Image (cartoon, rainbow, N blue to C red; front, side, top):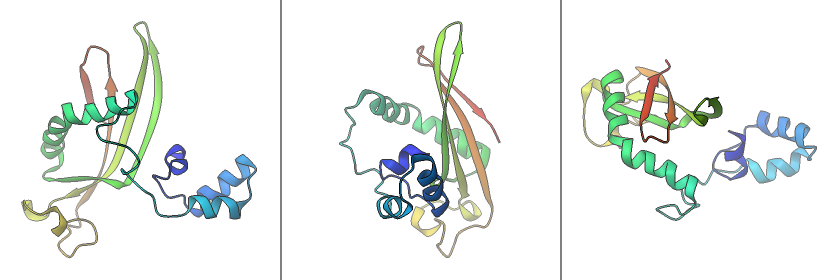
Length: 155
C-alpha cells in the first residue's frame, strides 16, 4: 500500500520509487533517500490509539482476534499469517443501507512444522525448523454498524 510507504511503515522497492518518481514528478534520488530505508512498524503511535479510526481497527483485533485465530487454525492448522509477506487493499461498497469499508488482508501463511506448539521463534521464516509447507491466505473483512462480522475465505 502506497500510503504505508509514505508513513514509513513499509519499504519502497526500486520499482515503487521509479513509478512514484514518474507519477509525482519528483527526482528518483530524492525519493530513494527518503523512502528506501527500513520501515518503522508499530512504534509511531501510542497504545491504545487515540485517533478514532485507528482505534476501531485496533478494537477489531481486540474483539475478534481469538475468533480469527480459531478460524485460521481450523482452515490451515497451527501457524501464523505474515505481516511482512503481506498486502492489503481498501475498497468502498455502497448499497441501500449506506457506504461500507471493505478491508482485505492478504498474508503468507506459515504453518507450524509437524503440529508443534511452543516458541514462535523456532519456526519463523528463516529459522532452521521452518516447514516448507506454506499457504497464501486472503480474507475479506466487512465491518457493519450492527457489530456483526462477515468473514469469507477468498483463497
